[in-house]
Amino acid sequence: MKTAIQGLDSRLAVIFGILTASSLAQLPMPTMSLEATAINGQPVGDQPISRIAAFAGDIITAEVYVRDWSPNGELLSGYQAALLPSSFSSGKSGFIEPVQYETLQKTGEENLENSYVDDDHPRYVHLDMKTLSLADTRSEGYRWMSVTLQGKPPKSEQDGQRYYAATIKFEVSPNAQGVFSLELDSHPDFSGLRNATAAPINPVNFEALTIKVLADPAQVIKGLNRAGNVVDAQVDVNRDGERNARDLLHSVEALNEPD
Image (cartoon, rainbow, N blue to C red; front, side, top):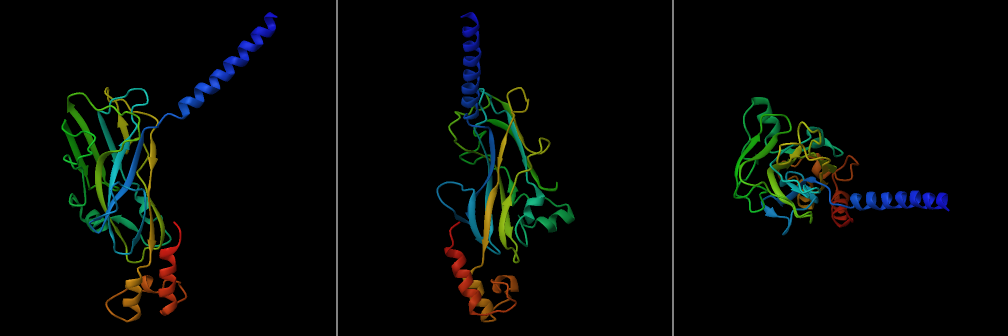
C-alpha cells in the first residue's frame, strides 16, 4: 500500500507540475512591438496595427510599443529599442527604411524629425514622470531609450494594454515589391526592458510590422499614359516586360486579394 501511495504521489506531482507550467506559459509575456499609426499623415484607425498595405512612395508613421512587462510584478524603470537594418530590404525587391535614412547615414547628420521619443504622447509609458529620453539617429538602425529619474516606475496590469516608447517614419521605395517585415533588433545590447533595479526583464517577445506593398492603380494609369516620371516597377505590375492594360487589371486584382 505504501508503495502504491508513493507511486500516486509521484504521478500527482508530475500532473501538478504540468498544470503549473501550463498556467505559467499562458501568462502574458513582456513584449515590444513595432506598429503602424498613419500612412501619409492619415491615421490607419483608432488603434495602432501590425499589418498594413501600402503603395510605393508612401510615408508610414510607426511607433514602438511595450506591454505586459510585469509577469512577476516588475516595475519598468527603463527601456531601449533599435531597428534591425536588414529588415528594411525584407521584401521581394526595393526597401522600406526611415525617411532620408541613406542620405543622413552617409553624412552622419541627425534625423530627429523622423525618429524620436515623444514625451507628451498620451500613451507614453513614462508619462508625467521625470525621465531621461533620447533618440540616437546616427547609429545604424537608430536607437531610442527612456529611463525614469524620479518617482515610482510603472507596473503593467498584464492586460495587453500597449504603451508608447518611440516614433519612426518609414518611406516605401519606388521599386518596392512584396511583403516586408520591419523588425526591432532583439539582441539584448540593442533592445530590452529594465526593472526597478535596472536589471533586465527577461524574456521579451518582439513583434514586427508587416507591410504588403501593392501597385497603385492610379500610378499604373499615369504610367500607361506616359504622364509623369513613373518608374517601370510601378507600371509593369505583372512583370511581363510590357506596359499595357493587363498591368492595370493585375493591380486592381491585387487590391482585392485577401491579406
